[in-house]
Figure 1: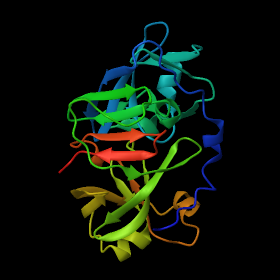
Figure 2: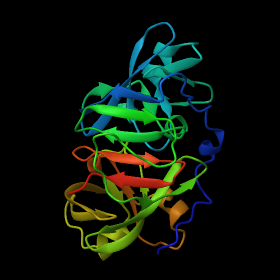
Figure 3: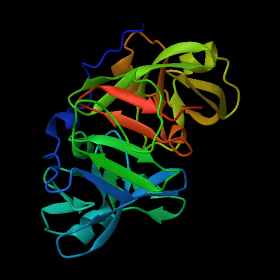
Length: 255
């Protein structure tokens, strides 16, 4: 199994805001829609302002527009579950503009890692559930678990096969495509902007969008220049997936 290096994760991860906590119901369903290849959920400010956030499994942030709408308020709620806005960084609107729409922010692992999470885009819902002894979702048939390596409670790393070759990968469902470095392009014979097959555990995804992203972010994971893959939202748009931070596992729909 390919070794993944997690020592150089962005310093911002270490300054993550306070995580959400569930009070009352042990399971919460939040409406989820897809826009421009991203999963979008509603968030509410204390004054009743309705916001829209992109769902990610990486870092929580605000757009400039979102930060202005929130103002001096110090807390938000996701499906009635409160989370702190302290220490959440703000990025330019352009970074959170999708298909012409500026979104207010991103919900990331600092918020989600207190729960077992079901990303059910086909069913139009994001489900948060209090941790249990095992990962079970009523009415859902999911794959056997794929082991996750979790760094700093929020960065999700695992192994995949892309076009038949094995690589270390990071899961960020906030990305609209897969991203690979040039090593993967060469080794896996990627042509154009599509990947023939991506295998996650026993589930195979076909004809996925991909882009080349050979920047410093890859060096954090593969200082020796090995191939590496960022796995984005395309695996979740037509296939419900489950992430458990406490059990360190990923499950996908069964195909």
